[in-house]
Image 1 (spheres, one colour):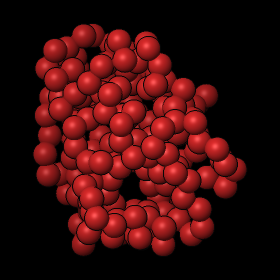
Image 2 (spheres, rainbow, N blue to C red; image 1 turned 30 degrees about the vertical axis):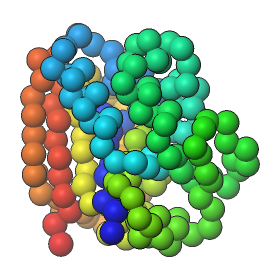
Image 3 (cartoon, one colour; image 1 turned 120 degrees about the vertical axis):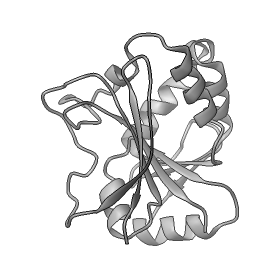
Image 4 (cartoon, rainbow, N blue to C red; image 1 turned 120 degrees about the horizontal axis):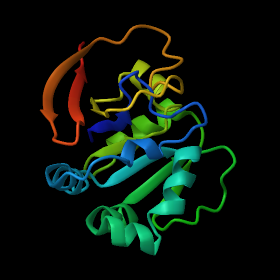
Length: 188
């Protein structure tokens, strides 16, 4: 079965978006060559991206642009080339290349996606997908980048989780720009 990984930046106070839904703060800060190399290397993993509609539309508005290709050529190239699956009841004509719309029961559809041949599946943002998929035991790893920002409010990745989820730290890494990478797996 293909692994499903959640990868998100979060603030020191635990939010992945601010109170207005903005995530741009996660990419602001000091330049760090080690961090840039980590991001570029991380973009090489997996072959499918899974998004909720809101995150998909935000990503689709940025990654195909000349500005994205100039700012982060390796990541932009990979994001644009990868297969993208968007969970939506309203999106009918996705504009970003290699995109399909996943409809119907979320858990059943993602379980079927995991059973297809291929590499890993990654969720970026898309907080509405994480609680039901975590509850169903479909997420294999949670990867967080804790950034040196305090937002004072916003949205947490696990809002709406109906019961506690025990996680085990499996790796970590500290970067010169103040970011801390943490990788967790669910404990059975």
